[in-house]
Length: 131
Image (cartoon, rainbow, N blue to C red; front, side):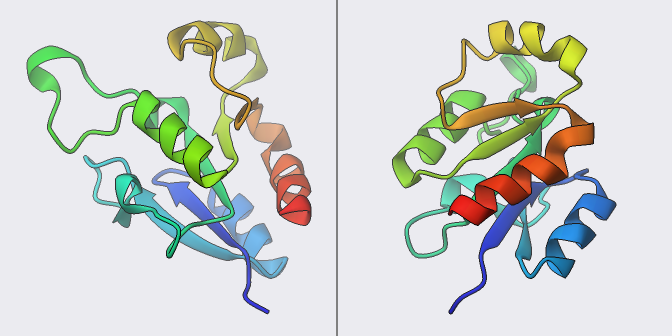
């Protein structure tokens, strides 16, 4: 049986990732295109898919205008990938900021869950138990 895989963006809490590894899951760095922290998230497909993605909101909001680079991930791209491949996406954001994030992200699809950082490990374990 293959181990389940958790893709994570740069900056994800190391204690969270260590707990997931100790639970028997593989953790795989993914990049938003700018930070080069592992495989570019746009390259995830059926053959190399992960079972769960964890990110912070600032990792999926690309700069606007002249500051945007061709490789930058925009949240719409990531949401589409997650919907097509049926990969749950946990966005870590303090509960007090979640209403604003929902507005910024255009009311994310059901595959995306905004989670307070204090709850991320519990929610990740719940998703992985169902996957």
